[in-house]
Length: 125
Image: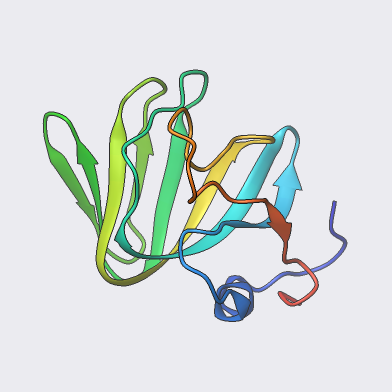
């Protein structure tokens, strides 16, 4: 747990790689993560948990099998557990994710985009 005020913009600015979420802080059994995204991710599901997206900057499309959901700055969308989805960003997107601790970014898909969760709270001060 962090002690003090954290700045989302400072945290996002310190991330160099796309699709590699960093834990900003935790609340109860959930991680608040920041991530930079660009291009297309992988189709995947999270069988046991919903996934919260909030766009800070840019435009994110979350592809679902039956439709696309487009988010702009300050928009929020929750992908329900078990729903296959694929985030896509034509330009760079900066976002906040909220997920249970231990949630893997690629869900059931695995692969080379699976992130090792990194802490970022020191640079966010």
